[in-house]
Image 1 (cartoon, rainbow, N blue to C red):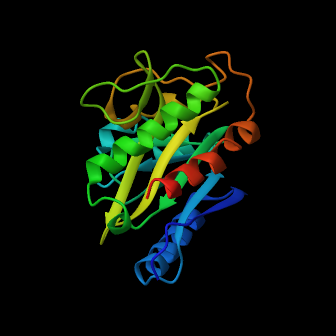
Image 2: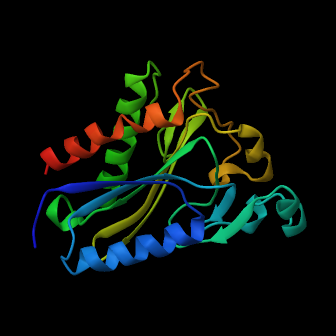
Length: 212
């Protein structure tokens, strides 16, 4: 089955382990050609994840402190270092077959960045890139993190955009292993809700399909 269609799924708040297992099932189905490309948009409860090349020293709190703060910890197979997920953050998991687009990991990551930059522009936020760093930035503050996994050119994991995220939870980590500040749409004065921000993404999904 070859198709440029991308299905959007919005399950709401999902525990990280459940979302990871769901991604794995979708990746297997996409590899088999049983389903078209997928874009999952969801929110996680308080969670810290460590990428496959991450460094434990960038996790600044022990298990007991994380437990008291109500934060789950999950090592995972995405690229990148340590990051935080939580309420008020849009997490996007594209399950895409890059063989139908471009077999270029760097181009794929840059495409995610550009999609986030364009979406933020819709809300009056001028965001951009910092050379040699992955993610989306407003000045020197990171507003969106990106970490992906690619197997046989099928993608999983993706991005996390801070909408109204409680940024105090980043105190437990060195985000992405970089000692740079983080920000959110709310901190920048954008009053958009998680739901309203999420509503921009069906347009993004359609734009991706039309570009194929």
